[in-house]
Image 1 (cartoon, helix red, strand yellow):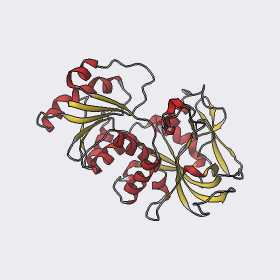
Image 2 (image 1 turned 90 degrees about the horizontal axis):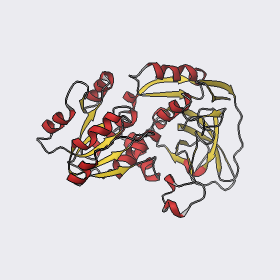
Image 3 (image 1 turned 180 degrees about the horizontal axis):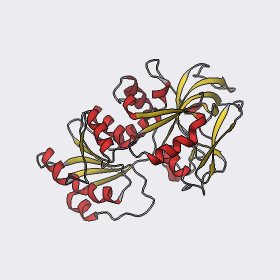
Image 4 (image 1 turned 45 degrees about the horizontal axis):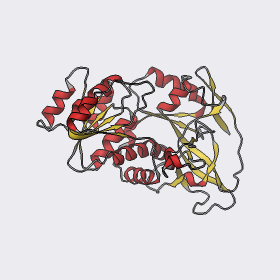
Length: 338
């Protein structure tokens, strides 16, 4: 079997892995596909070297087939196809307020412990979500990012008939737009990459390029002056933070999705003047995975169009390099059995 290990200095090496027998409460998986996300790219660039062990098998957007059960595991069968919710909760604390998915002792599988870019992967059984027969394993590897989008839309309290602006048309931004549309919202996407704009339009989304058009004026025009009920900041940019409050109506909601490691200048006066709300979102819960699987199985998320390329595990290094060189791409999958 093979595994893709981050070894530092923008290098991923393919090494001979090992099949780790499952302990009590664990399951060993034959990994089918593993997606590369923005966090994996941060690891590749060395931005998380203080957190990520070296070498480390990375990756957490995975689909797999159950290969072996540990003692005490029930509700799962060998041969079952699954998506993985890669969270290890740790001991709960009073600080957590029972929100274990963002608890103080949370560890992320694929960052803090070995991840899914390997042929065989042993994980806790509670991380597994069965995939229906209608869903391919390729699409199963998209469930984790789709669950992020479902979580963001749920916490954003998106309702039928509302207008939502999604700032940033990368993988998560596009998935948020598609999930919000399924909730009955009117969705406007802001994106500066013309290829991603074309993709969004092919998905039936309204897209604006804020580099060539006044985004606030366009949202005003498209909503007949009502502006947006909810804005999702997914770009991670200072420009996105600057414009997000200008897009909203009275008591509108900003949903902060992107990671902003540095402080940003925020127009707090708008929060006061229009009674805006700021909602932080991170990761997902079980119900978000269930919702993502349902939407994907019903064909509501256009996952085929979001998959840019599928590459064999032997080409993981080249795939990371391709992502760096191609800002037009959306989602790259690693075939862990190829």
